[in-house]
Image (cartoon, rainbow, N blue to C red; front, side, top):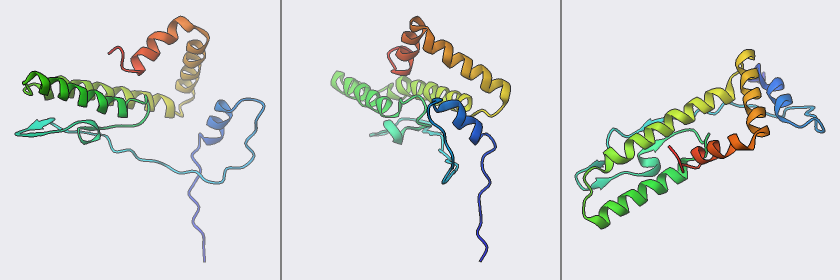
Amino acid sequence: MATHRRPEHPATPRLIRARIPDAYRVTRLLRTDTLHIPIRQAPTYQKDGVFLGGDAAHVHSPVGARGMNLGIEDAAAFASRYGEGGLDGYTQERRPVGKRWIELSERLLSVAQTSAPGKAALRDLAFRTLGAMPFLQRPALERMAGLKE
């Protein structure tokens, strides 16, 4: 019986070397795989008496770590509107926020996964620069945390 081996991603050894500190060495990969994350957003977050929020309204890559927080923000916006007695406009308020995060997470994922040597070098330089300059870290973290759009 022949065994089928999935070909190794061409960037895997380079990516591993670039992200593991010098004191450690990877000598063998036991398994590699590809993960596909479906990216979706509902065209409307409200119809009649049904309202969507969180993963029911928008699904995106975990890059950027905003999925759960975005869903909590959807719930808070719904609760606020409900408490004020006006649910109209929920889609107009929340859908653009979901769209921005889907677009940002896709851009971040593309940057993180690039195997183009020039782009990878620029990405690595940008992260080293960000890591060395605390005054740049705060605005980046505020954006990633959803404190600033």
